[in-house]
Image 1: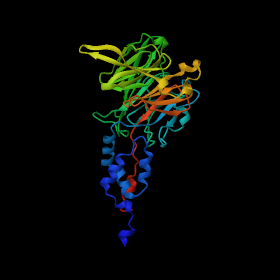
Image 2: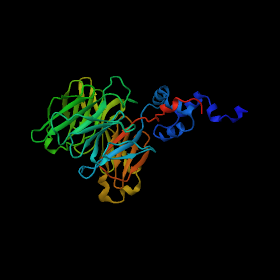
Image 3: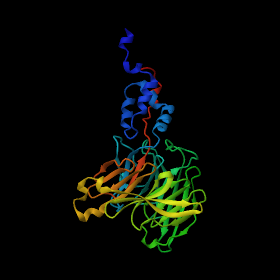
Amino acid sequence: MDELLEDPVSRLLPELVEEVFFRIPPDEPAFLVRASAVCKPWRRILAGLGFRRRYRKFHGTPPVLGLFQHGDCLLRKGSRFVPTSALFLAQPDDRPDWFAMDCRHGRALFAHIRNTSVLVVLDPVTGHQRRVPSTPKYLLSFSAAVLCAAQGCDHHGCQGGHFRLAVVTTDQRQGVTSGWLYSSETRVWSELTSVHHPNARYTNNFGAPSVLLGDALYFNIGGIVECQLGTLRLSMFEKPINRGGRLMTVEEGRLGFAAVVDVTNLTLWSWETGPVGAIGWAKLRVIDLKTLLPTCEFGLRRWANALVVSGVAEGTQVIFVRARVGSYMVHLKSGRVKPVCASSDIKIFPYVSFYIPAMEAACFGKGQ
């Protein structure tokens, strides 16, 4: 009689349940949250470190869970978070006063509107945040990047570990770009070498997005600024075109650049190297956005030039395009397009991470 009253859900083999959970798309973490509410055996599976590790390995590339965005006029408002899935993520305290500077390795970096030297590193999933000591020199305008400090990490679940920050700034009068590197482990800022910036007078120095390749960070600041993290050296080289665009990674882990050219052509370049070093930029691919975006984005000719690459989800082959009506997430491999918001803000910092509900507290009980 007891067997007849037993919940059939709890009788499912854990191995089979885990295999089903593996198939839940990582860009819809709300499904995992709902599954964890069914019964304690399922919560124990989801809370296990082994499942988390295997789930991340099964899916490989972390999904885009949302994006932080803001316009150029930062005194108007701070950044706002726009989810791309049914998941609400945490934001810094006093959210209207903070704006995003970077997102990487499950972390988001913010600066304060009224005092840009105040930096906060946030884990948007848990809400845990850490204030960072001010840079040795007060900086009114700068760009910054956050990254995991662990060597050999796959960065699929390292949000709680030590991190590093890189800050670069350009003195427009002296024509010099300099920077600092911060370690959360030592809580010390280290100064980077300076480099001459030939286009310093025409540089938009604030909040430039970055891309990480190997042991180097790259910023688009009037030219490409390369920051070697191991040697603390800065260097510069030219962009493929003298206009706005976003740095990215392309095939085989090479440095890439994406920009809209000739009104609607999304153009991708890659930085090519040879046996003796760098060769230069090579055009990789051209995508006609008229074939991907809704026709309403091309209704008025005078608005056609509004198409801009506003963000890149590092390591995912996903970019964001700002158009006349709104912003879109474009999957470069599949050509799939998804509208993400009606705003046409200039800068988008995608938040890329796995999210598996933390239900460890529910694992101490036994049975249903």
